[in-house]
Length: 380
Image (cartoon, rainbow, N blue to C red; front, side):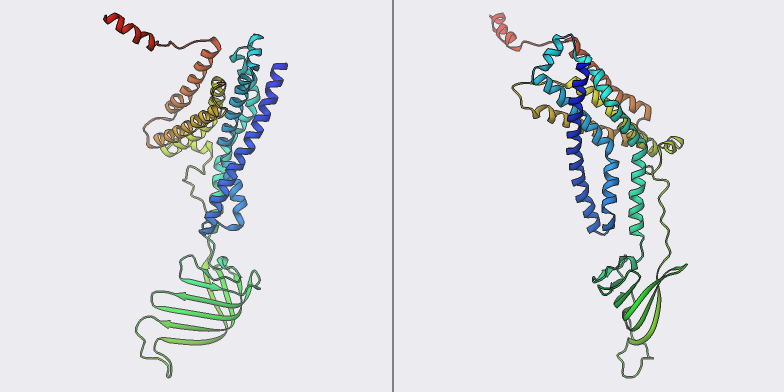
């Protein structure tokens, strides 16, 4: 009981500290990337917090797997470094006896990883794409910011309204539009936006409209006016700005489909996505087994040696998962053979390594110095 309780408490402390550090790093990276999307006009600045939350939740399986891997490895390595492992070994505890308490500690996290990979991952992808689609499909009037010159989505119009304007109405309005044949400048004292079945209707009051023809001026120009220039005054002027749009997601995109839908339609892209989701689920268990097998401490080496090796193994494992997803999507390998080959092989290597260290197996060593010394004697 003392053995399991002390090990679980230290694992919990190490896991919590590692999780906080990794989430902080991920949030910083996601914040920089999301602010870049908002600056380029690909995301709504008001949705930055939501996009950050969805991106972090989508990366939750990777964060939890890496946190669990580092926590177990660092905790068991500390036991070696402080000679506590020698005490447990002298009490009849081998390295394999640590596997049971570690798995009992890790199974709730492994369950969360599985739920996140199979259910939360497609949900966050769908919500993120939904926010981007709604922002990209907004009308030109929704892009207007009071006190700023704002360009329309296609670059054909420039809008300006007074900074003290309300949400659906404004004062001191300026609109400049240009097409292949003419340029139009409209100024108005006030205006308002009305929603109709066909789209959004912009109604201007007390303004002036000036139209300049780019092509040759017609023969019917007004006397005293420059050819190709038309100026008109208006008390009320209405224009339909943008058609009514509906926001839809691409139902054929495999990243937005649920795991059950992917299994019901086993196409190559869907199989590749299943390989990625199942890989996230199985990688957590594989890393737990590998962390117990790797636990060791060399007094002559620094404390960061094992950590660097753990991060390197995690990166290699993640890249192999991405590569296997592409192979399954291209049809080079089936889903089940890929899972057995990559994740089953990884677990088998981890279990053999753990069994060898628990049983005290030693690799055969080749005494090169003795052979080099014996070679001249044999020649003589």
